[in-house]
Image 1 (cartoon, rainbow, N blue to C red):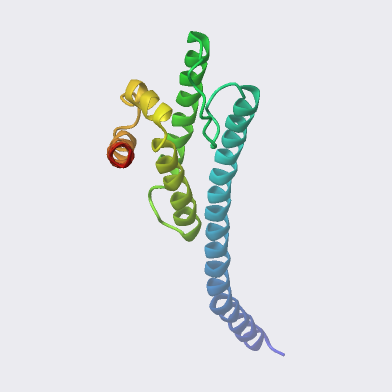
Image 2 (cartoon, rainbow, N blue to C red):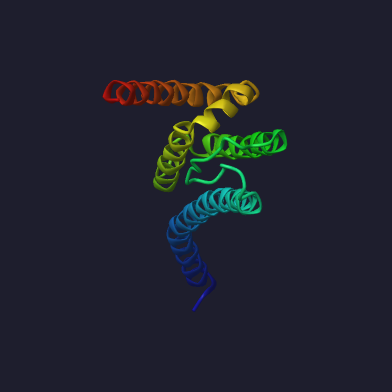
Length: 173
């Protein structure tokens, strides 16, 4: 084998590596970017999940308050201190809802859309509670403007529904 033939083999090998290597490199790069995006999405989920668990722990530590998902019916005997604690814990909850709003409202992927639907329903559920609406009236002016607009829209919807239900109960009596 002479030197020219050897050079030709090297050129063929080099060209083959280039032809095969570039698509493989592009594929590996795209796979890495996809993995990084999934990791960020799961990181967002885990971060919010940790904060939600902290909120649940607050609920557990403050069982005398009406701050858990299931409403207490007897709130007539709240002390000023209990009202104060409830308002503070609702501010923590609103902060958590704002974080979810900011992280999930843009539906760029399936997981974000699914998570957003759950958090949005959670916002509706909380706004349907009278004590949460009272807290929102006091605290609803200090958040991200888009979050405030979204929560105010929910607030108005749930307040209107509460008035309709109350009117229907009064008419039935």
